[in-house]
Image (tube, rainbow, N blue to C red; front, side, top):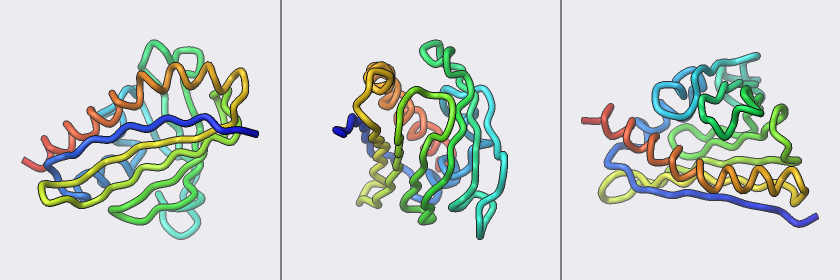
Length: 150
């Protein structure tokens, strides 16, 4: 089956560690993004927020009201560099795989948030929403990291 994808990128004047502190902890997502609450249903296999952890995020974004709380499972967590997750409940996208990549630059950190999922009717509906929201999420993350860094 073909895949749909969305991605957003921006460079932050903050360290990868500053950004990682925000993006690797679901309970901190409401501090910077379109979520009203976040937390964990279960810890990871070898660390609380590492691979195997199941996190939840309650959206405060109008476009997400139909899918108010998503449940995600962390697949990979390379501290300060990369976070890979899959959505296991609450959005109509099959085989959703998201990835946040942090790349050090001379001026800070390049943040790339991308996702792929199956090209289905539900997936195409999700695509329209995420094309709008992903750039906002990355911009909000960068702003929060820069504020914490200064």
